[in-house]
Structures are given as structure tokens and as C-alpha cells.
Image (cartoon, rainbow, N blue to C red; front, side, top):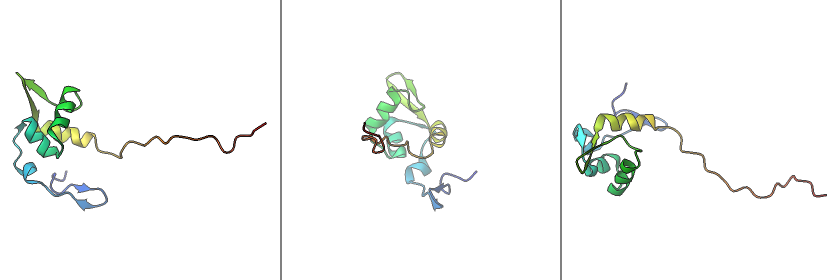
Length: 96
């Protein structure tokens, strides 16, 4: 299996490893996860509180295992969810 640094992103575009990915500790805090995932800290809190991201609460503090996050990211890869378009009246409908 290719490493995170060489895993393709999209159509053969290599994925570059950020400095955080190269040095991320095995157990991370909210701030470290936010940097690792490149999302706001508030988003990490919401994901954790809603049980949408693998984590544990240690006392009052959230902790995240890098290995679990990497598996979670890989299991959530795929095309973006389909958008729902509002449908207007059926143009082929017969009017009597």
C-alpha cells in the first residue's frame, strides 16, 4: 500500500505530505487534529461531540489516535454526496 505521502489524490495527482502529517504524534489533541485535517478547531469539536470522528475523552479533553484518523479518512473516501436539485413541474405532463 502506498504511503500517505505518495498516495494519489484524484486522477494521478500525487498527494504532498504536510509538515504536520510527517511529524504528527500517535495521539493528538483537538488543535493537532485540526491542523492535521486542515479544518477549524470548532469543526473538530463538533465532529467529536456528535461521534462522527474516532476519538476518546480523557477527563475533559478529547484525544485522537492518528492511526484511527487515517483509517477513518480512508473509509470515508469517495465521490461527494449527490446534490438534490429542486424539480419544477413536469414539462411532459398532459393538461386535460
